[in-house]
Structure formats: C-alpha cells, structure tokens
Image 1 (spheres, rainbow, N blue to C red):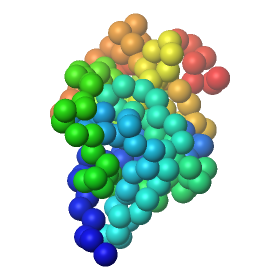
Image 2: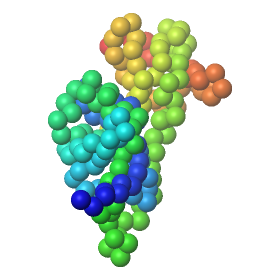
Image 3: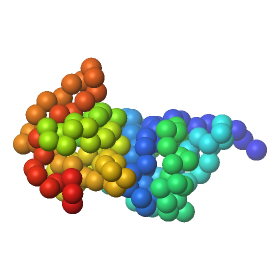
Length: 177
C-alpha cells in the first residue's frame, strides 16, 4: 500500500455556538484546495482522522460544520487541531482559479479580553467574537447566562491591549436581555 502524504492547510480554533461548529483558519494559499474538497483530515492523538465538511461560512476566520459533529461538546474535542488534506487532493497549479485576499474580524483579537462596563463593572471574559449580519458581537457569560454584546465604536470607550480589557458604556438594560 503506497504511503499517504498529508499537507497541513490550517487549524481549528475554538468551538462556535452550540451546534457543533468550529472556527477555522485556512492558510490563504490552500483556500482553494480546502473549498474544492468535501473531506478534510484532523489530527487527533497523532492520527489523521477523516471528516466530511457539512457547511462553511464566513471569510478569513471561517465557521466550519462537520458531518456527525452535532454538539458543542463534540466540537470541543476537535478545537486547536491541525487540518490537513492528502497531497493527492491538492489542486494542480495549472488548474487554480482563486486569487483570494483574506478578510478578518475587526474585533476578533478581543477574544479572551475582560469586558468592563462603565455602569455594571466587570461583565466577563469574551469567549468568542461572532460575525453577525448586522455587526460583530462579543459572546460571553454574565451572571450564569450567555449574552451577546454589540462590538462597535458607539459602545466601546477604550481597549487596553496590555491589560487585555475592553471598556464599554452599554445602554441601560442591555445586560438584562
């Protein structure tokens, strides 16, 4: 049996939402290869495990849904892993069509930062920055509930990169929704 060679094309990041989705980063030069393959390989305990792609959305940092990964817990087991394709699955250079420029989330770097509100004080750590149709939102835990906070110039008063804190002046009642 011939040896299979794998090429690492990117990696999974954190889980996204509760339906088994993962954030995904694919190296720009392998984006076309990734988009033209329905199966990827994820490194699990040193083995390349095949997964079929159910759905992909987003630009830059994509959101990936795999077949048979239907819960946040199942996706959690696959976060922060290398994503590969078999060498034979790569698109030959002469057949390449894409010349892609990557687009990233404006506030994506705030994941892990502590959100501090002018009125409410320390709200919590930002678990995830979500790309919603209307704007980017911070997903975090507040008083044992999951909350979404709009990330925009209107609400953010300052960002302290060194202390990893985001200072906001949120509208009254937003944290109670």
